[in-house]
Amino acid sequence: MTPAEMLSFWETGSRLSPLDRGVLAIQVAGLPASQAADLPLGERNRVLAQIYRKHFGGALEGFTQCTDCGQKLEFQFDLRQVADAPPLKESNLVVVGCWMFHLPTSRALAMALNGGDQASAGHRLLAHCLAEPSAAVPGWSEEEIAAIEEKLAEADSLAEIQIGFKCPECGVDFEEALDLGSFLWSEIETAARQLFDDIHLLASAYGWTEDEVLRLSSMRRQAYVRRVLG
Image (cartoon, rainbow, N blue to C red; front, top):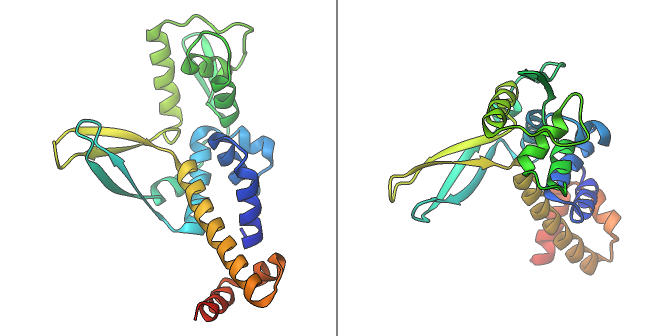
C-alpha cells in the first residue's frame, strides 16, 4: 500500500466491524470483495499474515494476561508459519455423517453473528456452511456439533490460530486465539496516525497539500520532518 492507500484503508476501515476490516485488507491487496468474503477462514488468515509481513515485518508482538492470576505475558509470533503455509485445495467440501459442509468463511461468520434466532452463533455458523442450506437451523445434538467442528478444523487447520502459554508466576497452562485482523488493524491505525502527524507538520511548515506530502518517499518525508523539528 502507498501512504495514500494506507490512509484510505484507515478511513474506510474505521467505519467497519473487525471482521469486515479483514475482508477490506484482502480486497486492498488485490482480491475482489466477493471473493475476499468467501475465502475459508484459514485462507483469510494466510493472506492477512502475508499482508502483515509485507508491510510491518514477520514478527508479531503482543501481550495477554494469565487466565488464572492475571499476570501480564508478552509474546512474539513468527508469521512465517501462517504466511508460508500451502493454500487449501480447491475443493473445500467436508462430509460429516449425512451432511456436507463448506469451510467457514468471513461471510458465513458475519451472517452467524448477526443472526436473530435462538440458536447459538456456533450452531448458526454450521447451518450457514451447509452445502445444501435449509430454511431452519438443523437441530444437531451437542455431540454432532462437536464432531462437525472437529472435521472442519481438521480440513482447515489455520481457521483458528491458537498460541500456548505457561504463566511463569502461577504455572498455569492456557491457550488463546490469535486474531490476525486485529493486529493488522492496530498497525494500520498507528501508521495512519504517524502519516497525519507528518502531513500536519509539513503542511504547517511549507504550505504543502496532503497530496504533495504523500507523494514524497518515506525517506524524503522523514528528512523534512527532522528539519522542521530541528
